Length: 102
Image 1 (cartoon, rainbow, N blue to C red):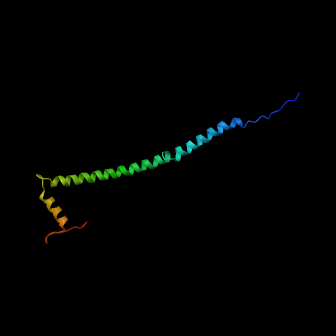
Image 2 (image 1 turned 45 degrees about the horizontal axis):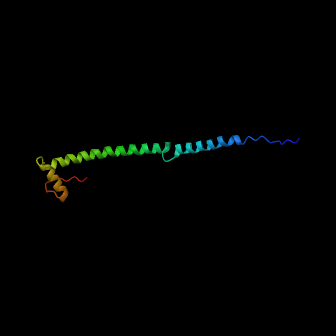
Image 3 (image 1 turned 90 degrees about the vertical axis):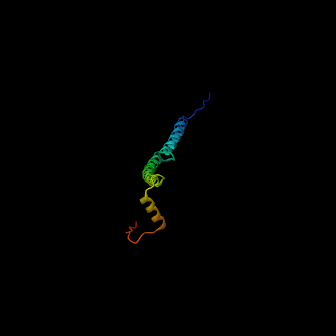
């Protein structure tokens, strides 16, 4: 009677874990350095902080401009403000004035 002998190979058992490990490694790399990863989140937070500081500065500037516009409205027209705006627009001054250039 003849018997066929077969070698016991363990490589078949390693295929599924190797494929799973490669998928996990792929997703881990992209979770760290991808477009929406941890490093990108830090960059977005830095950009957000910069833009919020810029927003605060622009809000203050807008409030200042709104105050100046409010002084030019009818009924509350300030003569000094009107005179200042006219002189600045026309680039003129009188002989007895001292002009301070910015």
